[in-house]
Image 1: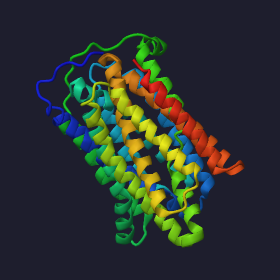
Image 2: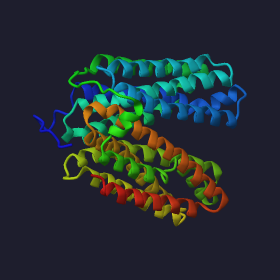
Image 3: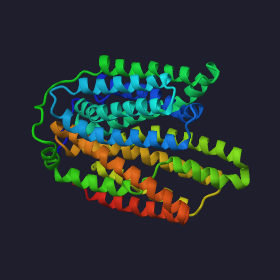
Length: 398
């Protein structure tokens, strides 16, 4: 689709984009507080790592499928905002309901309900954001939203530690406090985001909607899918750093350094989500910025293959990983919005989220198994190949 001229180059930071950014910040702040203490909370209920795996796997799977369904459904609504707001309400209340849990089954029910809310709201929120700005500002708008979301993830663990100290490690009281930022997210989307109904709702079945997605977007999905097959969970980087640093720093110090490196990762993530989006708005081809981001993932993989053992080299790895995630998330959404007509944005964002979810699951599983069965060098080498193929395919997207 050809970009439409905008009246001003700074009009992208409007009431809607600010509201959606604040909504993402508050919501992520809320559920990341819960995520930070979830393992310890489950342990206090007598549930071990097995329960944590079941809870998180079930929640992530349900969220992925609900994004696909919500993407189809939101395109058929005259107004998307009520569905988006209902998703934030469900996430806030379900996360707060963890405070009432007395066994692992209660945690499973609350967590999956919260992640169902995430799935319901995501495609519609992205569609609202795309509708609030001109196409030449997609990069900045989506980058700003990702930056705000990541800031929530940065302050959440700090807040969790403060609340644990304040409540004398009463997990139930800490989880009850998640309602505060969660409900602020609901208020932000409710009062700041105004939707303009200037489109005709889509019609037809789910599969008809999939078939109507343009060839250029399908090419993007292929590139994203291939890249995603190597895009392992970055919590594996924490494990890698801890293992690499233990011989010289000791187990406890290595674990602390690894966590500090992950904070560095999140800081670069937040900064480059916006910078990558801004850059993509100011170059002739937006996909070239995404290809560079994918290329930086190749560089990260090559360093990992070499087996870095110094804090400095590991800091470079974590910084590159943060840049990659920031650029990847902001630019994939921006390209999707650019390639697909507004009335199909929900379906496009839902499909993109589903492809990413499949890639995340498959890559983390395969990379983890290869690491355990053979070596981390082989595992990260495979990732590098997938990253390189993804970069090549993205450049071929039209």
